Amino acid sequence: MAEHHYDYDFVIIGSGFGGSVSAYRLSQKGYRVLVVEQGRRWSPENLPRSNWKVWDYLWRPFLGLRGFLSLRLFRHVMILHGNAVGGGSITYAQTLLVPKESVWEDGNWAGLDDWQAKMPAHYDTAKKMLGVTENRRPGRADEKLREMASATGVEDSFYYTEVGVFFGEDDDEPGTEYADPYFNGEGPARNSCVGCGGCMVGCRYNAKNTLDKNYLYLAEQQGVQVRAETECVDVRPLGDKADGSEGYEVVTAPAFVRFAKPKTYIKARNVLFAASSLGTQQLLFNLKDKGSLPNISDDLGNRVRTNSESILGVRYPGSNEDMSDGIAIGSGIYIDEHTHIEAVRYPEGSNLLSGLFTVLTGGRPGPSRVLTWLSALFQLIVSRGLKGLKSMLPYRFASETVIFLVMQTMEGHINMRWKRAWYWPFKKQLASEGERIPTFIPEANDFTEKAAKATGGVGLSSMSEIFFNVPMTAHCMGGCAMAESPEKGVIDSQNRVFNYQNLYVIDGSMLSANLGVNPSLTITALAERAMSFIPKKTEQDQ
Image 1 (cartoon, rainbow, N blue to C red):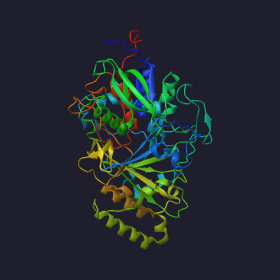
Image 2: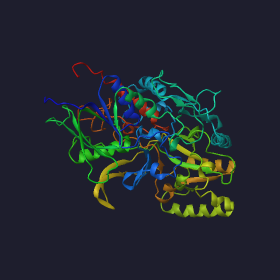
Image 3: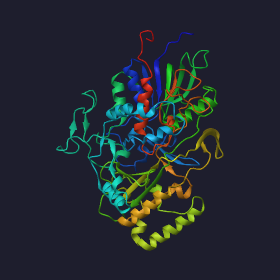
Image 4: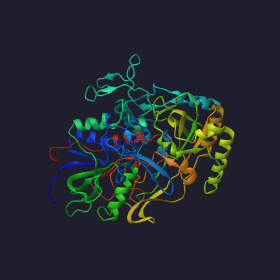
């Protein structure tokens, strides 16, 4: 075996839940760790005050948009995901729920471990690190959801969400500063939640338990280096060992330089991909295609799941009740054994994403649904007049709207492929293939219609459902499935990439079933599990 001088023991690509957990646990075990993150580092001082500040909110670097939320439209689905130091935790709604045990019996990971026995301990660790607690800032949107649940006969299923938010002491004023309340003084000082509803635009009040305040913060205290605004452009085995047994050369470049990007070359004994489901698939497809990692399993990109999601809402145009107060996702209900709905909100004034919604529309998926939409819009304006028209405009959208995030545990998936688009044949990119997943969930539409009628609101559908015939999701999962062999997946039960040594995938791409709940806690728990298999660094390693 050739002798190599390694710059790092582990290079981690991405700093979301899988990457941050791994960085902290590896640093505890004595490894030298570098985290490469293409997004920016955010703080309460530089976060946007509203999502109308698109250059600091949306992610499209080539267009000068250097925020943290990316919207990507595929043939089968529109996907929202985050890019930042701390990954999606900067823009997620910090809802941290344990899925039903039945999810471990579905998909490729079934039978790879005694999941029901092993996972509870990892969930407990994840909850402790992320500061999970029940919502203590319920707002008017949560009260509305309870009213809707009562009107539709499912009030018994109403609950306040388990979230990663610091609420402080009940007797103290919201916004009060506290010394580190979680890690025996080793973490940062925190402020209690003010209930502004701004979690998904980035918490400017130091209350949201983002990864840069727990796992990643502690990792950096342990000596982990984080290179922000840096993208990985290549990973190739060192020496003459094509399986990576001698380590890897990782090539990076500045994320925000448009042309002639300077390259940096890093030697690492191990590489860990944690760039989110879409990010990791895109990178691995590119590395496989250009010959850097040609032996990545051909199963790459298969069985990408969307949590069987639909995004709907009810708006109350002209109402004096403020639906933006509280936390981003404060409560939820189950309308049947498979269908879970959460009440979502944005802060007052953050009305940008109103453009993703229109009047609630039924009908059948496909071109004919546009005609159904026109009919629904006409009926709305005729029946509600000026209020109906106002319900379609951005003004006061956040203050007047309860957004529904609908998730199901029902099986359904698409496949991602690496190909040239007809409209841009100069470069390969991710493209979705396969049978279409449901464009909308009839049960959720039915609930929304009844809820709007019972509470005097206007029901809303997603624009993508009507005009592109695709659902919208904030939870893209899978594509690098955990399995027993490379014929059935990309990684093994310990997150090691098949056909390679010293190569790992630990992020949402490893999930093998629709969870029916927000996936962040499960990704964190699975990352804790993956780290449990890696031994402490020995003197021989050093």
